[in-house]
Amino acid sequence: QVQVVESGGGLVQPGGSLRLSCTASSATFRIYGVGWYRQAPGKQRELVATISAGGSTNYADFVKGRFAISRDNAKNTVYLQMNSLKPEDTAVYYCNMRIARFGSVLDYWGQGTQVTVSS
Image: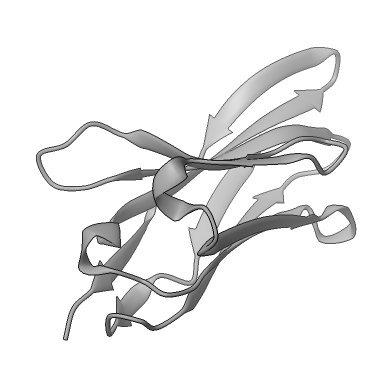
């Protein structure tokens, strides 16, 4: 069974930084594309950033220049470095990993990590 776990959320002041981590724990698998999403209260979940198996990245316009997604394949981990945080970045952040395992390719979601930007 694959488990995807996010960590690194918390309370930060406007202008501050946080680094989120998303780790998959299992044996005998390959991680393809990974996406970070967020959902604020009363709003739909939205895509924040993606990284392909080869390391190509894409960002939503509202985080370009402030957030950076990266991956460490040896650790089965994807990171989201968030700088210059704004109150409107407050949300639960979720990680989605597309994982190949035993001949199947499936999407796995983590449980989310809360990010609160407030003074």
